[in-house]
Image (cartoon, rainbow, N blue to C red):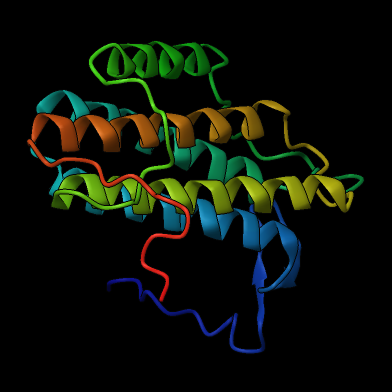
Length: 193
């Protein structure tokens, strides 16, 4: 017998957390890990759209990190008398690896002198979109930590998401550069009638 994807346990608008307990589906914890899941899906789309192998590899390296972050966010502290589930931890060295990738990408790019319009080639546009989802995920985690519901969420999660969004911006620019798709700079007042 195969297991079914549907459980019907969330039909009343709540969901189970890893390690026990149920919360409404719009709970800040669910918003945070749900947005991280959305980011991971956006990275999957970007990886398929990107033509450059080095950029695709950087995206592929980030996706498992997001599963770890999702597990961290989906796991509240253990209730009294219950054992906390075992979840992976986010390797602190990953932030340094993201920074090295940013530096490598930026070494090939011209200095930014203006805001650039998101877009460009298909891969660049997909990376820009993933970057905006990453920023939203970061905001959701910050909101979670601010409202006190984020017990057990290490500071490194926000730092990682902040750095990942920077990397995605640099990768979008690099994908466009390597594809020969010029960046469009935003000129204040342009296009106004």
